Image (cartoon, rainbow, N blue to C red; front, top):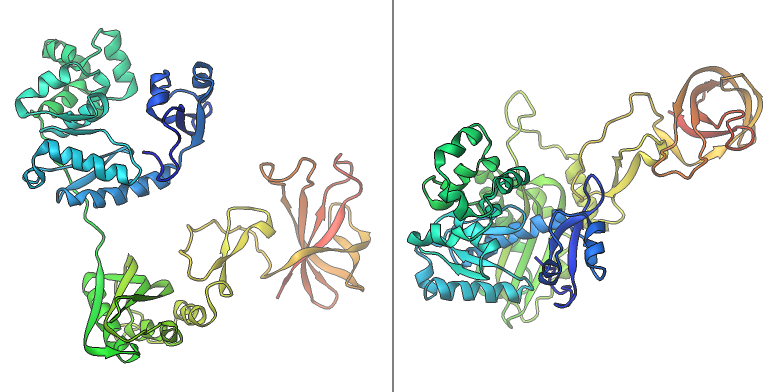
Length: 488
């Protein structure tokens, strides 16, 4: 699929690439590139030798899958059942729906037209089986219609790749002289059964052929659309302030969420004005919630932002960014405590000050102390948990390590005395070292390793300091010493 509004010219060979074991390979091509001999799955460097004018852009595979999932639900304007087919297709079960659009031919024209308005090129096929439709859409004409008694004939001229087989199986069939589906149909079944009896589905041409011909069932398992939770209040006459109606709207919406076992992280308030205009107001939460009192409190300082115009007579409140949320018992009597949770405090602070000033620390996958933590918006979705270092780290780290002047150092140990912030500190006891090597994939060549020590000075102050580099390590002069944090 081409990106909407950013499609290359029709006369330019263009491919999307993805990383592979031996370098980037072709992920998808346009028609000009295919006619020039560029093949999907081939190395980009080899295809550039064939087509010097080839333009290459890296594919956003995760983004394409999300877009395709949205397209699956969008396509239900033509039928009630749809499902994503791999990374480049959609299967629709249009049984009983095509006559509403004037027949199968008119339905395909309508589909192609609507997809083109989205900036997408398409290859369409109607067939009695999933496998036949898959093969015809990829290796048949641009728009193909196959009746139930024409499946074997229509598929006969197509390559065996149209049976959704893996590459080793396709290569094996070609070596056996079976290059088309028709040639495979003509081979006595018993001669192939022994070879592929224990093969997996993607490596068994007999099972794939049965699915395409309809002798082996392959039903469409349609995905369910995301649930929608919305509460509304219709007013007998226009008003200018929605505040009195918000508690009931929040209560009704939370009741719907509770019955379905969901919570939400975003609320969308919409007021429909009598002049035909619409005003919106959004609030977000740090964690999924369905507490009506808490959700109502988030609108307290924001309702004044709504422009009432000449008044409005319809208010809707919709829950977005849904997540499964189960009841949790936090006390022995049953139920949960009503104390203010951290997530609710973050929500109130964010509602008052905005999402930029309110942040929270998160762990990052790095063993370099200053890189192991980052700041994230309090309302952002929590990232995957990162491993916590096994060694004890100080609670407080300096924004920038501060260099110290070493007066006397113990070999292979910490300084016996050092000067920091114009004060002389004498080391009473220490633990370490903990050696931290540079991250070679990020740091510049010549970056020196660090040896960290936990020390306690003569007055009981506990510091975390490190020696940067070793004597005669070939990466600079004498080692340097820094204070990096405090244990409090």
